[in-house]
Amino acid sequence: MASNDKRIAAKALAAAALASLSACASMPQDADRWLITATKLYTAPDQAALADGWVLVKGGKIEAVGTAAPPAGIRSDAACNGGVIAAGFQNSHVHFTDDSFVGAATRAPKELDQSMTRMLTRFGYTTAVDTGSSIANTAALRERIRSGAVPGPEILTAGSPLYPYKGIPIYLSDLPPELLRQLAQPETAEEALAHVRQNFASGANGTKLFVASPMGRGEIRRMDAAVASAAADETHRLGGLVMAHPTDPDGIRAAVAAGADIIVHTTIDPPGAAWSPQLISEMVARKVSVVPTLHLWRYELDKAQVPADVQERIVGLAERQLKAFSDAGGQVLFGTDVGYMTDFDPSDEYVLMARAGMTPMQILAALTTAPAVRWGKEAVRGRLAPGMAADLVVLDGDPAGDVKRFADVKCTVAAGRLIFQRQPVPRHNAAHER
Ligand SMILES: [Zn+2]
Image (cartoon, rainbow, N blue to C red; front, side, top):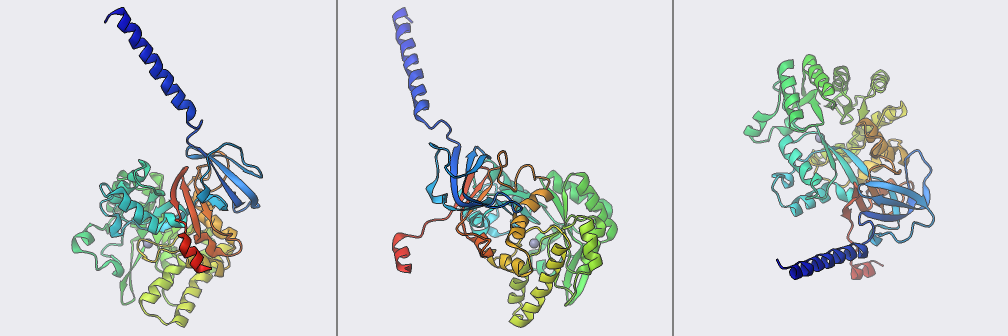
């Protein structure tokens, strides 16, 4: 190259460098720094709410929380402003077993986004605990979310559950035989250990034990105590939590004895069976958490066409279990069993928890701080504070006045990413409604 050409090339390079510099300068200083304003902010269930607040998000974390005038010149999304903000919610009992999640590794992102929106993100869930599914598929789904391909919550999973020996519950009996054969029904402690290890190697965060399986016609098959204890010990050794499906108070007793951390339902069998004060104090002493799933009972009793007054009595029994457990200081985790239950709207669950005597702030704790503590993530999520994950729910009203507002979600933000935004009602429709 001649020296003249060299000079021209150098000039061109310098011009290109300048152009790229000015392109940078014209862009916002921090593209990943943004602001969201609120009429009310719940930083944590045990803190006084803040009026006219804002949250400043940078990357995946909360940079600052404040009131009055927000910092100037920072990008803001008008559609999410002006609501009631709380920390992102955790649904502690879901299943990714719906057909619409099948083939998660390769399924079109748009389809997975729709399924996730329908079941979880439109209701403010930024963390979901899957208490039983195909571990390979759920791990693939989690990977699609983590890679950014699919907007969704953080997923914690129990992977494939363990059932009693020859004890597949009656309500799973209509699964295809080849699928039924794959379900783990360990006969020995060694078999249980192998299942737990395989599950964790595939990405599980815990183990789900069906300590008692309803087999139909009143028969309940129970997991051998040594098998349950071995599975629980190995789960703890691997750093996970043990979730137990109890079926009845004897099932809870067995789960607690085995070392379960979370009981994933209240119980409605046998008819009229309450949780004794001794059982409750043992659960509390051993720091066992409960996921009430009260609306699930209504859903099941509706399916069985049980008359309304009988339903009320049965659901009332579960409400009293929740109240006694909560009053005794037990840790309640919000959860619905969606994925198994096709009724995705959690409004009634909030209403039933309130009817059981929980205050709106106790329900908020069951959605945020309690599950964060349970999973050892209290330094990461569950509250709005600088340095915490930018997991936010924007509600369109104040749940302190009406707990159904917990389900009235405008926007959901997970790790600083907008994963749900409610579409505004079209103008002509809005006019119609007035
Ligand atoms: Zn379930």
